[in-house]
Length: 114
Image (tube, rainbow, N blue to C red):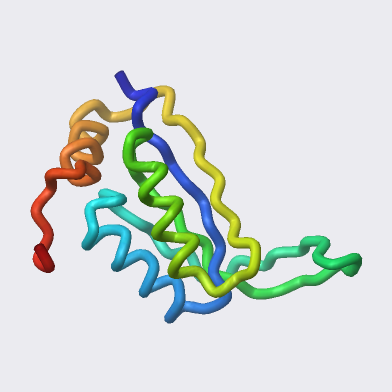
């Protein structure tokens, strides 16, 4: 039943933003884990021009049922006018790890701020 697990990608302008978003998503049980990968160099077209910027990539592990709430929270926290959020389905993986993701990205998971 791995198809209910998602890996989501989002880029952030700096480490502080990435840390704030990652921490909020995990504290609020919207994600089981968020990896922060600094040193990503992104080249993209924006408002008619090509830009290249250093960014931090977030690799977010969550479940399909948490994606709507995760999307809403990420968009509320993100400073970009048009934040990246791409969700990729997990088709296979270590069963115990996938169970862990399900358990920690669940709406009923207690958080320290509850």
